[in-house]
Image (cartoon, rainbow, N blue to C red; front, side):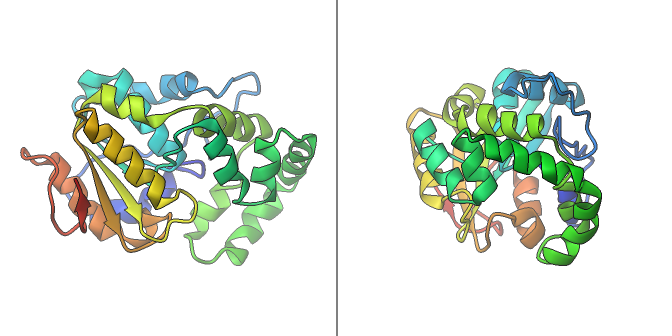
Length: 254
């Protein structure tokens, strides 16, 4: 996710019996933020791949869900299964730009290529210490550490990751190429990554023979914060010899 690995704290608290690593994505949180990086999918994967221990279940949220699928396609022998939450399942760039553009002024200006977006983001970076302090007081429906870390990025890391990962990369071929048991967990009230697009993605992946399942849960874009117990149940299923299946994680779409 674009905030930091601390986004997973609540899931880690309830998912007993798991050992895991929760990294900050390149350019976000407390990870390095090289100004010259392209922040392409490949560069993000180069930073993530050394953390894999074979075989492992890879979990991703939002932008991180796109990268998790790409990681599984590239590192097939080291990824046993995938749990993808709030996956932005955009089928083409036009859809991606339209959906991202409705999320807020900065997002819209960024995908439109406006210079104003760069100036706004750079101004926010100058005010980062204030944003880190005041953000948790304004945004109260997420853990304070997650909100604070959401301000720890740069214009290159934000704009290039948005353009080259979320807008420019299609997750469907990755899920097909990876061929590993995959649960796409999606909140029924997710306004960031529309449910209908996730349904279409899973249907297309299954049509191509990929072992992908859509698990719809009550909640919004932040299932790891709102529904950690349900996600822990999905993790246990993915780790079991039988792989995915219906259970306490909620209804599935096959």
